[in-house]
Image (cartoon, rainbow, N blue to C red; front, top):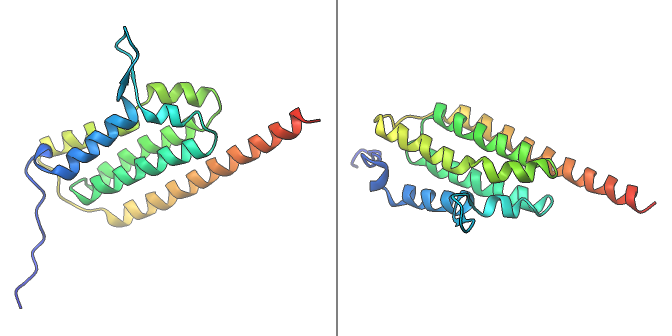
Length: 165
């Protein structure tokens, strides 16, 4: 039986179709559309964020899926932690009513993460693993997402009772 060898990631970011796919999805989520007559760009993330609970959670799920894809294709554990912090900031602040909606238009966590991965590839450091650290971080992110969902639900429930008295 022949020994198993691990496939090495491509030498450049652009050489890997899966990473180009991540970049396309990040663009769709953060800057696909332009406000006519301006340089202001936005994506689906702030638009979906206008939907209470479901919108914020769905954009977080997409961001985490992109993060996992980047991790599987060359991002080191330390880089994944930085990327996850971008997602965490986007999720926590984006979950705040009104302020979070405005924040979502300005803070483009997916594009920040793609830029971090591009720089990581440019430095030639796109191999390595920190799976234990990443698993712990993903569990933490899942807990934060659950808390944001629960908090949003409670806030809506409170608002419903407050305005229906």
